[in-house]
Length: 118
Image 1 (cartoon, rainbow, N blue to C red):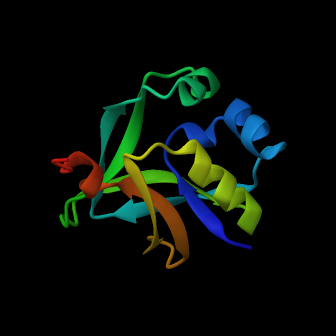
Image 2: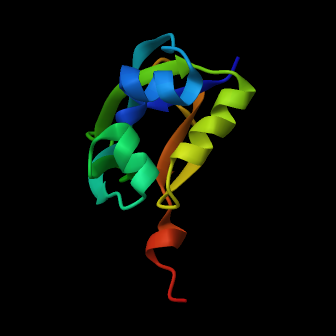
């Protein structure tokens, strides 16, 4: 079963119940060399579901002093695709290695979205 690192609104029970029809099982973990910043969400569906205009987003720093705490959540392949549909274009999904040594998906800052000159 794939795992997804959640550090923001995907940890909220109401978001999980709406997106996946259940609360997810998971455990705490840490992602090193990243930090959180905020982005403003304008997608009306995401705003309605999360109830939050600003969401956190992971940014790679490379600094071993930086870290982000969150939860490694167990999802099915279908639920991963549902999570993809929830995240706006500012995020991209990638596989990362966490402090525990486990590998899981995480939503990172999509640099192409922020640097698109078209």
